[in-house]
Image 1 (cartoon, rainbow, N blue to C red):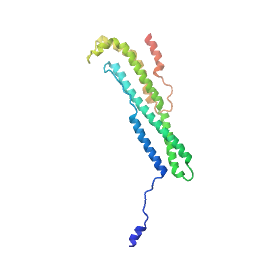
Image 2 (image 1 turned 180 degrees about the vertical axis):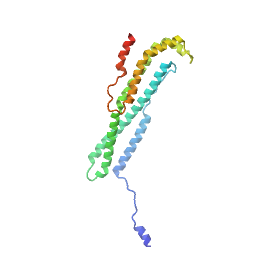
Image 3 (image 1 turned 45 degrees about the vertical axis):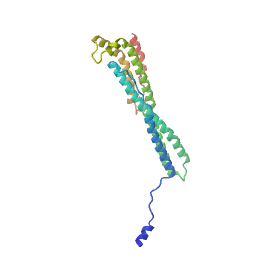
Image 4 (image 1 turned 90 degrees about the vertical axis):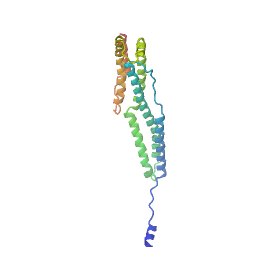
Length: 228
């Protein structure tokens, strides 16, 4: 009897319930994460179309276009995720800071600090990794590669039938020699574009991009050399 009474008198231990504010914040964070995942999957991915024919230089340009599109897709989606998160965390951190009082400081302050830290971290990531600058770099590289391929096609037009009819067989040595001359003519422009893309990745995480030599910066010299 005494043992039963002792058990009955022992208060039940309940799990601490989350406060109303904590439940609201956690629900909002869950919805945000779900939204970002859906946005990442739903954002359009660039696709490219090629006629499937062409020599080695054309294949190299097409592969560069594909890689450039994939790079742009990565930075573009990352920027969208960061921007959407900042739109959510920045005003919420401000609201939490403004409604914090002496009575609710213990409950709200931890969320206010968390949101402020996340906001500062994302802004730092966007700045340090030069997200917006890299997006611009890959947009410009895509346009430059398309223009380069178009110019190359114009100069290669007289050998088009021979390339299409080769069916994987070696081309006539004379045509191969002329194509190599075209490759050499356009290789400098191609390498300038590739260098700009590599710099975008290499400079990610550095404090300053510094002065970069972009394809357009050297293009005038290349065009003048071609004309000569």
